[in-house]
Length: 427
Image (cartoon, rainbow, N blue to C red):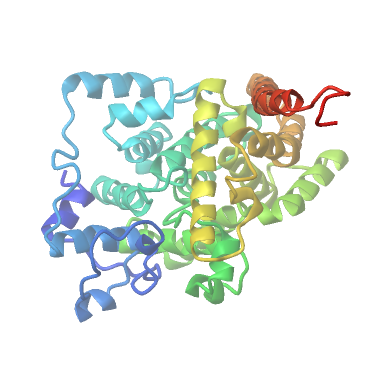
């Protein structure tokens, strides 16, 4: 079928109804601007597009050629390899980077569609397959491909991790079809239209989203509203009763809002209390929803629990995005966020701190809740990855120390050579 990227090139992209426009706050100015801004027509200003979809549309109207004109053409060999990988989509060592290459950048669409089909959600909810495909492609396009980390590949990775958690015995035995649908939708859309900068950056630059959401869960609220916008635009759930549809939108928002890292301790404390009391009952809808929230939180930050080969790539990508924000802050004379300062930080230091204070506390509790082979595997990888980053930091510090010593040594010898022996004319 015709893909959304092709649609945007030929000018058939529909209006966006649920998101907020990045028409006057253009995140492209945070990167590079190779040419002067062109005037935007009143018609386009009225369109409620996400930044990413607006960018695709404006490229067509301004006559800028597509980066990849062959876009979605795959040969049989690559398609076959991608299908083989999907047979093992429940494996924790699933290589999302390889899968993304095999699908020519369509990992999120192909993986999510496959999981919907695996669970029988298309039949259960009587979803129109064309609308579903269109919805998933619009989601993928609304992720910013220029973001090193918060892009569609990250969303696909989180969705694959979420599937692994949904397969865990305690969840697989109790979750309803609606829980499964919302869990996968939340994973796929949890960072939708992410601008590549964090909430403090939006607040200190007086971005309109910060004002709109009153400086509270700014990005997460935007991801949720953007997801609802695409659901409504695609009419994917339009055949459901209005009350059911609105309830699903609210529950989707509750899941996405749980990924706000600033509320990590609140969720972790509640999770720990439930586990200490042993009162979690997954036949209770509220408890099931809470566990879905915790599963999504785990999926969102599970990179340090992946095999080193995958974990290291994600660590480098997220640090690159952090440092890029810091470069922007320095360039515009803003206070540089400590985590984003490349002059005082390193990938190893950031990852060691992240693992110790954010990842490990969460996954220790998840392992208490679901003491399975998967949990043991994740904790084992986390331990090995911590060791890997610590060793890397130690080597780097030792190397820096030797380099500093070598720089000081010649200077000392020169200084000593100028000292005159006692009894000379200079003494």
